[in-house]
Length: 167
Image (cartoon, rainbow, N blue to C red; front, side):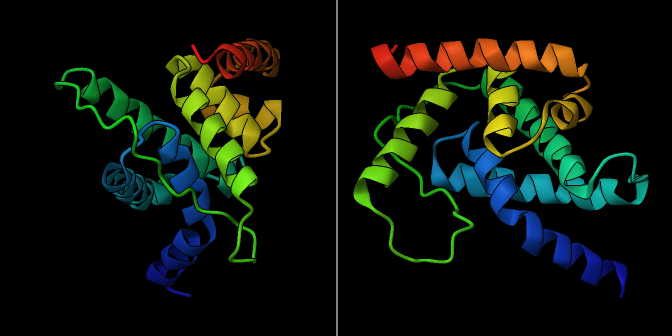
């Protein structure tokens, strides 16, 4: 298998994960697509340096979060656009094409609440919601598992507060 084929397989396998991570940092669909492309470009450049110390999924998530955090840093230097009523379709790994309206609404509310979290909370909670364990999140973000568990707890509390009060 050539390196191009391996990369294509990586894109096919991890595109939903990357898109979901990108959607926690950006709400506009066009910018989510752009951010996703930036992540895959960074992955393409970083893949030769992958040593296998962590799983490929963890490596992909780490690159995605680093690119997204850089995007947020750059965005804070640009003027703010108001697109508050644009909701984005989040890729779903499920096979069925139809989704229940209440499930979609709950997912959209959760995504909007995650976007309102500070970046440090957003990083850990988005990985936690993706099913990553504290050790994997620690490898991804460069923290100890204990520190990650504390951050997850704080992020959950902040998320709960946002979901209950809307602030």
